[in-house]
Image (cartoon, rainbow, N blue to C red; front, side, top):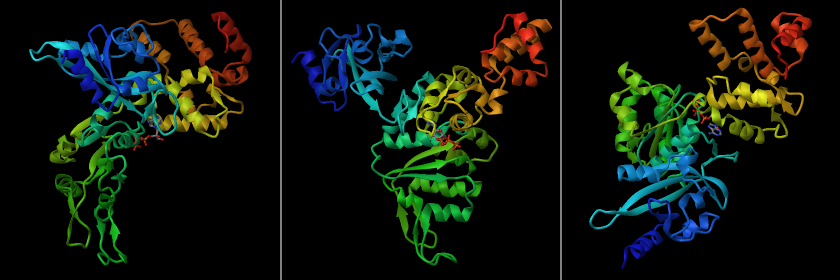
Length: 438
Ligand SMILES: Nc1ncnc2c1ncn2[C@@H]1O[C@H](COP(=O)(O)OP(=O)(O)OP(=O)(O)O)[C@@H](O)[C@H]1O
């Protein structure tokens, strides 16, 4: 058998879309799953991978994506990346694994590309999925997919409202436990008694009021995934019990004698920096290392401002105000707000503003005051300039008013009141600096 036949048989045995390519991106072997996934015809020895998956004559690194083939060539080791591909189902997220294929003498014959569709995330609004297309979002998807293929304990670290519970669900959904339960344990405010009875369940008569026995969450989760949300809030005295459970997967119900066992996959999350808590003596080091097998960092919304328009469309589409649209000024203003509450805050802001807006267009003035008053990047430029080189007051006034013109969507009369000047003075100033209200 020659090399091509060997490679073709290897590819046929893979149950995911797969191709074999040479360093010039040309496809030399393809399996049926790949042909069924993409809407372009593959001509062996001619078609290039990027022509099929991206509908582009340029390799993916030429339009801002990481090319796993280049990585693989430079390291001679397997590489992975998450890309957006044009499939028969439209633009879809895809996790790529690229491996060098060597002959018996160790010479690289080419590269095996295996593709895994990611259905828990989408580039555009899609119900029940995580939405986004920024680079930090794609990096996070790559980590989620890696984690979901094993049973490793995952630790999600990200600010409040950044999507930790959604990511925990995605890890479960993409794993081979997805037909079993996904159980959330909210660790904030769990007292010792509640911790034990909620997690381990109790037997009839274990305490006053225990008129019948009750299953604990750990038992319910058997075969599936347990998500410990805000695990940093578990008090020290309960951390020992938690560690024992995680080490042995064994526990006893409150008032019970029999040892029970539950096979569950562990995902934990915290908005606090757990290593800082370890250093302060507030979180056990051994527990930290038990839960942090595979840390996944969730970017804050400030790190993925590019995703705001997509997220805004998504939340509007699934709200009671689907007919409304944000003005470009309002979107610009949102893109400058710091979002301490991240995506949850964005979602609330969108619903509030859509409710307040009297028209079908949601203007900047419909946004909450906190967003309207937020420090903008232009403010920061001014502040930095002030520290380095002084500006004249006229230049300062001009810079401020030009920014107001760009963002303000209310009436000139309201603006004049806010600026504490008359409408005539406002128009005089605008004329002086050659500015116009939008
Ligand atoms: N990428 C995303 N696309 C669409 N919606 C998202 C995305 N990420 C988060 N959300 C939504 O934002 C809200 C907050 O997400 P989630 O509850 O998962 O955050 P969290 O980090 O667990 O919050 P907390 O720290 O308060 O527990 C939810 O309504 C969730 O559906």
